[in-house]
Image (tube, rainbow, N blue to C red):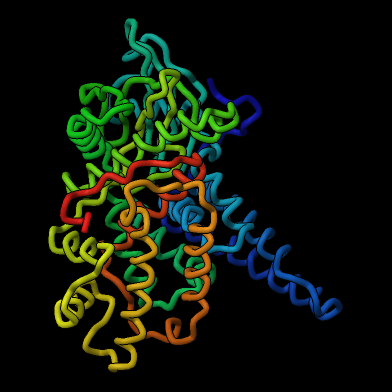
Length: 441
């Protein structure tokens, strides 16, 4: 059922000019917020930036919610990388994982006419006029056909064609919010653009959903819905409706530690099999993409973002995660070159500095792999991760680097693991950290 009282959108700005105008007006509001902050600071030198961050977060989120698409997706991604943003942005942008203003029904009908030459009620026996869920790239309606209960995901108009231009427009906000240098951000945005273009291809999503679901069907306590290619198109996906609770709703029921561990184990096993066996991974592990069912299984309901790993990247990256890093210095240097942590442009001093930082980062990320069991409810571990993130982002040597650091393939793999770890922390799960044999030493 649609959420009552949620205002629907009758149109989305789809032309480059309309979307650019929206970004410009938002930029003006953000600029005004800075002027207001510094004017107040003249009279109160002790004034913190909390109010400024809150005002900016509201203005940016409200604007991106109307535009939808890539820009809102970037906000969602930034909310997951919790050590990248002030809390006001995290709290506001996390809404992109769950709720955005839904599209009105006439626009939904228009999409169906375009791809099926029929309205939704010509295809399905029932179809909710209101969206039951609206996020960054599409919204979900509930439908029935015979005795089947279905979820129908419809992509917002103009999202696919505006990915490239939107990312250019969101660049100034990202530079200011993420505290990155331009080369680093461009390196990051190139990979984001590639994934987002794939994410707008719903035919590819249906293929990947069916393929990964089949490959992971043997994993205990996991559930995958069926997909219906004949009822899907470039901008529409039809799949089984999955009954259950989103993670945060489920946690409010105060589940037992046994159930927390069971759901956490299913999540870990799902990612372990994808990364180390399939070499491709569901790279969007946020709570909105999973449903906890009444029988204690974890339903996976969205395969929009999948990262395929080249074998050379996989071997280099995970060799650094081994507990006893017994690699010759020359071989270790080659891995750092291959993963683009260091380059020939670096001085010897810079090479030593960046190697030390990335060894520390990957060693910290690898801690769960270094034990047979790991308790993700341990907040001290996450404090170490956030403290390291803060230290690196404020380090002058790191910030003055004129080149991007790290392979573009690492962006989504790091994001996947930090997203996975954050979810396991929220669940409060203690799990058996299964891993391939070659990583056990």
